[in-house]
Every structure is written in structure tokens, then in C-alpha cells.
Image (cartoon, rainbow, N blue to C red):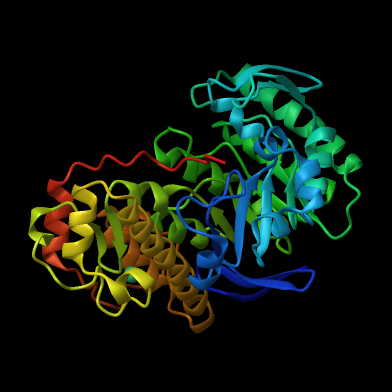
Length: 407
Ligand SMILES: [Zn+2]
């Protein structure tokens, strides 16, 4: 189902191919989020046009509405939403961090309150697997217990142990042969627990490994420490998925550590606030200087938005809060993400990944890439920067929340 085809020297970056049934996605790839079987403001058709080979939905939310019986009748989630690509489903465990939904936790599973009708549901590992099999997703996740940042060691250890016991129960309950099952490693922000959890999950023999409970509001460098400490214990031949991470600079950093699969609402949340991704960093379309700018967001971008609309028009749509603007901005950012992943894959194959990642880190985080990269390949290129965009970045208050595994 998964094969690593190319590796970058001097880092953990790898390119590969994931085959599920008759569908193929080259890795590393990024999945747009369709929590309730609907990506925000864009359709399944749009997703296919902009090159998204895979998306992620949420099993718990779809169980609560419309119910798996409806989706099963539609021929599974792909038939229901008329999407022809690969669908991953998250178990629902992460909703624990959503205050209105989460009621409590016990050995048996997690108790939630439905946001639709207030009904209580006990999500057990067996129920989560059953839901995901009914949905017919291509890749399912084991139920996990994600402890928040700031948890004590006791809490973190308890969450990890429940996650492990649920992983075993999930594996035993899973019977749909055509569906991949990913185990989720936890361990909160304790290195030794991260290592222990990765080893435990790796030993069970899942089809893929997910790293859960990272980038949930802590300083990012702590999450990177956790990945570095534990990734070496993830089986080389299995796809590795980091849940809820999706800014351009975090993607290249994580790819260099050996991650293959990503998902995040980050590009959509940025689009909502008028922040657009370009090869020279973020462009804030609300800036007054775009009022009379009749160029596309980015010259040479092949996306629908850039082929048809100007910065001036998009500036107007943002200022007047038109839903069309939201749609056009999301389209561009998601297209950019797909194009970024394509370039990452190509660069791993032709040996230029380090240069590409240095450029992305430099224009997106303003960090000195030499200090943040794993690779020790020497600096061979001069990074191109567009100064006006950089100044603007410094001036604009960045209101975007950090990555949110909001599925
Ligand atoms: Zn574009």
C-alpha cells in the first residue's frame, strides 16, 4: 500500500507513493479538511481541480449527523460527497479539546454531547472503528486520548495508556480489509513517553503511524523536540502522518524529519482573514496598497482565482465581506498548498529539497533556516525575497491562530 521511492541525503525527507484500491497519492501530501464531509466554501469538484488527492473528515461528527446509515446508503463517504479521491477519517478523539462537546473520559471510551441535538454518546474504540468502516473511508484512525498542553506527567501517562489500550481494541475491532488503519502515538510533551508510545504503536503492526497531540497551543519547538525524539522508532516502511499541522514552513520542517502526510485548517483560516500564500511569503490582501493593484495574487499561479481575478477585486471582496471573496481566497491557498507539496515531492527526487525548504522557512517564518533545519547540506543558493511583502509581514499583526487539528 505504501512505498518509499526517494530519500534526501542528510535529512529524513522522503518521497513515496500511497496506493489504496485504485487510488494513488504521491507523498508527502497535504489533505484539506472536510470535517462534516464538506470542505469550507468549495466543492469536491473544486478539490479535484486544484489537485487534492486526499481529504480528511471526522467520524464522530458524521456519526452524529447525518448518521452512518445515510452515508452508507449513498455508497460511503466518497459517494455521499461525490469526491473521487482518498478519504481519511479521524476517530473523533481530538474533539476532547472542544469544551462544548467533551463530557468525560473513562476506560471504556470518551463521552461527548452532540452539538446537533444535545444527545450523549460514548465513543468507544469499537464504535469509532465501526463508524469509520460504515463510512468506507480509505484510512481510519484508532481512537486516541489527546491530553492538553500543560498536563501533568500523571495525566499524560494515563492518556497514553488509554490510547495504547484503545489502539489494541481498535486493531481487534477492525475488519475492513480495504481500509488502512493508522495507530496514533501520544505521550503529550514528555520525551520518554513519546518514545514509549511510538514503540508501542509501532509494535502493533498498523498500516500507518500518526503523531497526535502535537501543535496544540504549546511553543512549536517543543513539538519538534517530541517528533525528533520519537520518529526514529516509527517503522521506515509505513506512512507517517502528523495530525493538524499545515503551515508551509512547518510542512517543510516536518518533511525533513520524515513525515509523509499532513492536514490542517491553517490555509483556510488564513484565507478567511485575507492572508494569501505566495512563493515569497504571505500577502495580506486587506492592505490598502492593493486597492488599485490589478495584478493577480501571484503572477504565474495557475489557480482559478489568479487566472480570473485581481488583487484589487479580492481587496474589495474582503473589505465588503463578500462570501465570494472567501471562496476565491480559499481556492488560491489550497491550490498553493497542493503546488507546494508537488514541488516538495519533486525536490526530494531531484535533490533540491534542502534549498526549497530553506526558501520556504525564510519567507514564511523569518527564521534563519540554517538554525532550524535538520539537514547539514551547505547553503548553495541565495534566497530570493520580495522586500515589500516582508515589510508588510512585519507591520501586519498576524491574527491567525496556530494550527488546529479542527477535524
Ligand atoms: Zn492563485
